[in-house]
Image 1 (cartoon, rainbow, N blue to C red):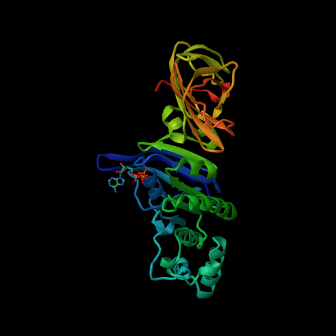
Image 2 (image 1 turned 135 degrees about the vertical axis):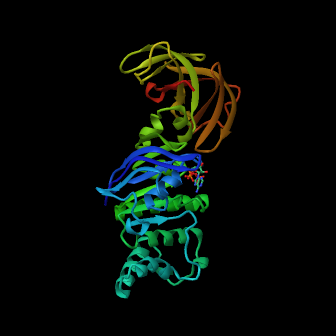
Amino acid sequence: MLPIRLEKLRCEFGATTAVDSVDLHIPKGSLYFMLGPSGCGKTTLLRMIAGFQEPTRGKIFFGDRDVTHTQPEKRNAGMVFQSYALWPHLSVFENVAFGLQVRGVSTAEQTKRVGAALEMVRMGNLAQRKPNQLSGGQQQRVALARAIVFNPEVLLLDEPLSNLDAKLRLEMRGEIRRICTEIRMTTVYVTHDQKEALSLADGLVVLRDGRIEQAGAPKQVYQQPCNSFVAEFMGETNFISGTVKRCDATSCEVETAAGMLQSDCGTASVGARVTLSIRPESLRIADGPNSIRGVCKSSLYLGEMSQHQIETPAGIVKVFELDPRETTRVGQQLSLRAQPDAVVVLAEK
Ligand code: ATP
């Protein structure tokens, strides 16, 4: 179990800078996510950590070991690809044993280690099948077994669930969490699916155009995004523009077209134009202080919640009502109340 450290890591492809001066510490034994929209540099970062892509500048450390120019096979990193990349003519057992054979591990030791890896991913009973006799989820389990069978110091996962249907993705999320907890390897997981990251990650980093926008724990990045890009990327939110009227160390008041709103953020300057981010699930349909009034224009009843669009003087505001008792609120005058800790003050969008 080793921490991974990236120092000023950069990768250029001709005129394109895929990764730009990334500094990052990934704690040992953690399940760490790299998250961001298509083209933000996630795969390039992972390929540099794996050793498949030479950085233009910067350094990569596994613990104290500088692996920046170390060959991939000497890094002791297991990798799982989006496409699984299983050998079609080999059985499940042979696919998992392949890496051990190449490393000259004895046949008896291979049998023991492949057996343990297949048990870990719950595929011990299908060891003799060929990949084309397996479901997508089972193939992904084999790919995981193949990556962990030689006890790598770090595990690298490149969008491992993107080829699975929604139900299987949920099931495999739980499995990946279980396996990572059991093997306690430092794991770097690349995805563009923020729900996957929020539900699994110990820590995560959001990338844009090759740069880190924000790094932190899932709850922190979701609830306290540092800018409107991160706020929007991590989930649905409402942006409301305003001007800071009062601010002290612990709270501030922002004047908006929908009235004065209070936030627990205490870092804005009086007079500054700002954008407030309020997540739809943190608004409550209730009267009281810190509320916005408007008329419901549409309601989508989903059983466990309703999603409403409210027309307010500050524009359309989305609100998620949990356990709704009415299927529609269209036409109703509503007051939407926000707790100050759910109102995030960001630089103007
Ligand atoms: P996706 O989610 O679509 O896989 P990503 O975040 O993983 O995207 P990368 O694949 O790392 O992004 O690509 C980052 C940028 O570098 C993109 O602009 C891409 O076009 C460019 N790029 C990646 N690989 C190469 C390459 N081999 N040659 C030239 N440009 C490349």
